[in-house]
Image 1 (cartoon, helix red, strand yellow):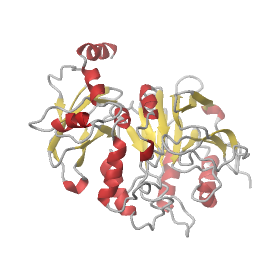
Image 2 (cartoon, one colour):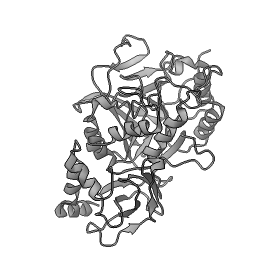
Image 3 (cartoon, one colour):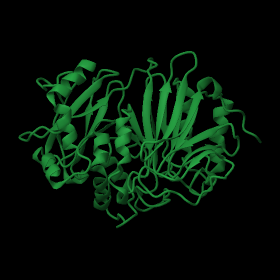
Image 4 (tube, helix red, strand yellow):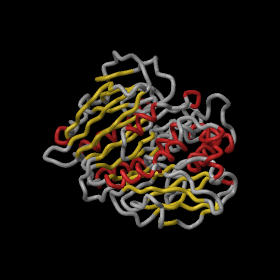
Length: 434
């Protein structure tokens, strides 16, 4: 692999890619994309040991395919997908699957519109097999408001060379500036946020993501009339594999070797204040069953809003459901469960209200105003930071006699704010207090 990167450096291909993906997209750079028949750069998600899903947007209706390879810097004989046609129905976006990939391998890929120049070179790494305890590094954060572009913090996230990025909600602010009302409006919000530094991150790093409220409107629940429109735009603009059982389903889990399983919770489209549920019965049962079945050393529960926050619109508005989830984890002695969250525009280590032994790690915002309404003196906080935008870096070492996780927070200058080390054998939650 080292030889491969030396070859790429010697040939200058990576430099060309970086220049094409520059920190801010000028009219000249946009024309580079369009000379390829493309309207944006690349993104990849739904990565497994053997598959990945490439996202592409073309300039108007086009036929497009993906060229991909592992160790041929001259692109002499890349593998190719079938041609996919884009249309106005999805704002000329498409999702192109890559199959039969080799686990734990770096792939390079680029789009090709027949009769046009090849697109910029992008890359990702496939996941390790389920029986391999490989070290894992991922970054996490959410809350990217368009008025805070160019999202310069994402350059530090990219430089950390993570295996993947967990985007934990509020990927757009559809209800800010000129609020989105139509599907086309929502598409425009995603397009606005995708250029520049954000595109550099997505061109090198798989993204696993979940929506929160600003993808539709602040604090929305299951009855919001624009929920279907916001959900469609979310699917159109992100590399998310549709569920064969339910094409509207967003909650899912992903594994990265034996050490990591990430559970992405949808806290919006099933949220019913009248029934006192955030997840809905089906999603809640799925979570509890999958946690029990999981063989991963560490099980990361990613909630767009914090479990430990006592306020409305957070899990504090749904205490019975929250406590049922915590109690089940404890009663079944499910080890290695770690809670991650965003949304509240501050960084924190926060203790659960029913049992201070259970901690939640909160990150963000990446690019949005800080939250100055919450006091760091609240007893639930072990660590609290509301002075700057921030992101999280999670390093998992699942092998050895004591598997461990290091959780770190970095600010918008990439200065380390805080660090927590978690050892698996010490992370069995104690029983809930009655």
